[in-house]
Amino acid sequence: MTATAHALIGGAIAASTGNNPTLGIALSAISHPIADMIPHWDFGLGWRKKSKVLLFLQSFADLLFGVAITFLIFGSTTDRVYLLMCIFISESWDFLQMPYLLFNWKFFPFSAFYHFGHGTNGKAKLPLGILTQAATVTGLVLVLRTIH
Image 1 (cartoon, rainbow, N blue to C red):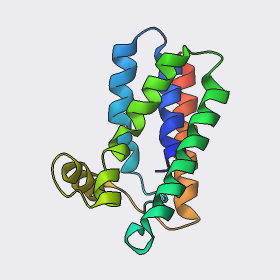
Image 2 (cartoon, rainbow, N blue to C red; image 1 turned 180 degrees about the vertical axis):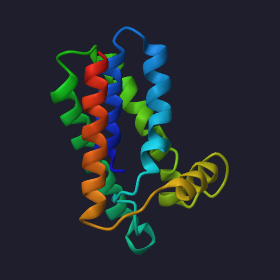
Image 3 (cartoon, rainbow, N blue to C red; image 1 turned 60 degrees about the horizontal axis):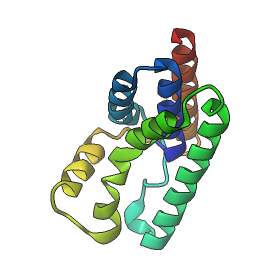
Image 4 (cartoon, rainbow, N blue to C red; image 1 turned 90 degrees about the vertical axis):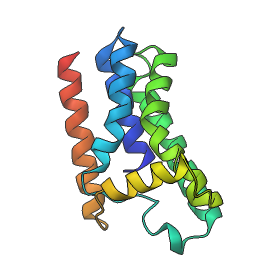
């Protein structure tokens, strides 16, 4: 999924778990691989055909956009440090793959995160891959909002 999707999921988890960071951080951590199993499109698909600079710029822009929109949606109702922690943890699986993709660091722990993510990532082409992602994030946000 895009970094934006993972940020929104982490933000919704932070908002729904309130004053329980142990639960929120744990759910944010496991949300990433679970959400990635759903067929989706993201900037990392086809990474071998992209320059490393382009892959980094696309990924970084996606991350910044995701953090900004998550803060716009959840920042006024959730402790901002806690919100940022849940976003960071929900994104961490991809952060740990970046050295493998960008710098060819094909050793532990980066290779382990890359191989796990590659093996569990559900892939879909555009436009279906965006639609499945939007539906997943929207559904999770709505469910988590009813819990809080």
